[in-house]
Amino acid sequence: GLGVVAADLDEDGDVDFSGVYGTYTGVEKWTFDAYWLWLRDARSLKDTSGAAFPEWIESIAGVDDYKATNIHTAGLRGAGTAGAFDFEAEAAYQLGSAGQAGYLFKPVRYGDEDAEYDAWTAHATVGYTFSVAWKPRLQSDYCYFGGEDNRDVSFREWLDALFNPFYRGSSVSFNRLFSDACVHNILDGTDVSNLHAFSVGAAVSPTEKVEVTLDISYLMADKAFEMPAAPLLGFLSEPNSRDLGVEVCLAAAYQYTNDIYFVAGWDHLFLGKGLEQGQFMQAYGFDFNGGSDDDDADYFFFEMGLSF
Image 1 (cartoon, rainbow, N blue to C red):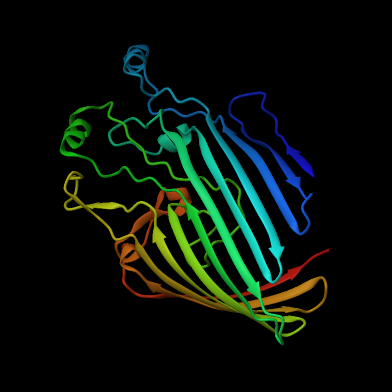
Image 2 (cartoon, one colour):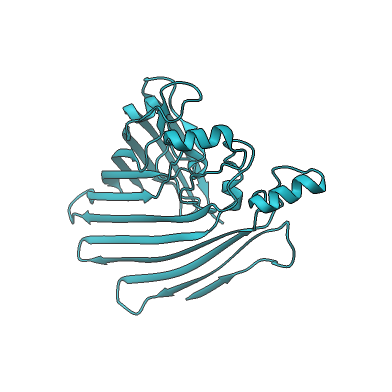
């Protein structure tokens, strides 16, 4: 199959999303996908709005001149079965200009209009289903969203930022675009990046309509935030631990009818040192999480779905 999505690209000020997605099913029990997605964000960005002379100085310095953000994401995916095994693997590379991201980083007065996307994502799953009562299934899973954290600076860069009003720098992690996939219940609101997640799990079906699952995941930051030893002294820093912790999820699903299902579950996060200290992971790596307490976290959930 071949799908195309497109949006109006006529004028600046728009946020446009387009792409091409192709699927090949010529191999029995296997599906192969390839795609290219393009997000264009042309909303106006301005660090300052002044008289002609300051604007002329900015033009000479090469600052406050943001181009439209263009995020290109190209990926491959394959999924299928071989006997009692099932497999899925996907990888994608993201590149392009990141003015909207660079605008958020203002060490002095100006954001980084030269910021760029240059990150990978990957996901792989292997499962095995036993042909016995309750159909027990074992699964292992790995998920990765490339991260970047350039907030730590050398002494020279610190002096530059202190006295140079045109100093710029940014950190751009993988942008998950409009994904609705939640990697883990406690940390991920579909916008977490800068992450490695290693998981193992098991599932059983006591009846045809009931499935009980248990998943255990180890979470780790891709790039650790370097915490300054003192306020405003960024060159004196130590990297936080990358260890985010271990998350355990127990859930049960009930397929009431072909159109209605119920899911209930409990997650417990055994907090790691990296979350206790804090990392930039939320909002595609722009927001700080953790860094305030060393208590574990619990998450209880209930969901009902209706298809029609």
